Image (tube, rainbow, N blue to C red):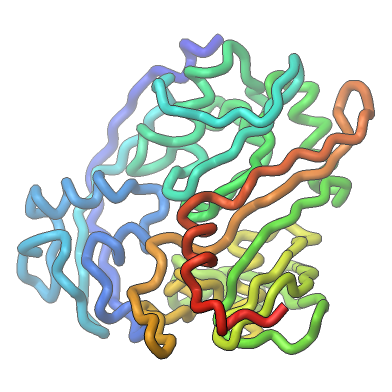
Length: 327
C-alpha cells in the first residue's frame, strides 16, 4: 500500500516576490524565507540562496545570513514539484501506539506533510518509515494525518493507522470532542487570570502568508486561556483552542497585544530586551502542544496523552532572571 506514495512528478518553476514587513527588518535572509515559506526547510532555502536563485532588491543574494531591511523586495525562484512521500529513517518519539492510531511528539522545525517545494524531512516521511500501515482517508499525500501543527510548533499530534479510525477522529475534531492544550509564552503582562478570545479568523488579503481576525471570508474561532506564571515582561499561558483555524492561537494572542515569543510574523520583536538579559528571540515560536484528550475510536476508552516541554523552551524559561517571576 505504501508504494503508492513514491511516484514523483515535476512541473515548471515559479518566481515568488515578497516584500519585507517592518517587523521582519533585521532578520537573516534564510530565516525570513523560512517563515514566509513554511513548506520549505531551512536547508532547502539555503541551497536556493547558494544556487543564486534568490535576489534582494534585484541583486543576487550573497549569503543566507545577510540581514534584510524593511520594504526590501525579495524574489525566490522555486521549483514547483508535486512529490508523494518516501519513507525516511527520521527519529520519531512515539507516545502511544495500537492497531488504530498512534500519538507522536513532533519537534519544532518539522513540517507535518509534504507539499509544493518540500518532499523530505516531514512528519509524513518519518511516519512511513516507522509504521507499516497508515490511513489514506486524508488523501495519498497525507497518509495518517488527521490534523496538523505549524512547522515551528512542537508537541502532540494524532495519527490514524486505518481509514475507520481516521474518519472517526476527524468527526471528533469537527464535533469539538477532542480537547487540545498548548503552552505559550507571550510578550507583555496578561492581566486576566483566565479568559477567552472569540474573534473570527481569515486570510490576510494583503499579506497572504498571514491570517487575521475579521474580514469577509473569516470563520468563527474561539480560544480559551489561563495564566500559569507571570513575568514582568512575559506571561506563560495554558491555551485551549475550541476551534481549529489556521494559526488560531498565534492570531488570537497577537490580537490581544500579546504575541507569542519568537513569532515575528505576528508582531513579536526580533530582539528581547530585559535589563541585564538581552538576546535575539527564539528561532522558533514558544508554542507547544502539550496534551490531547479524546475517546479511543474503537473502544471508547478515555485517552490523555502528553508531551513535556522541549529542552530549548525549558532552558529559555529557566534562564529568565529569577526576579522576573511572579507566581
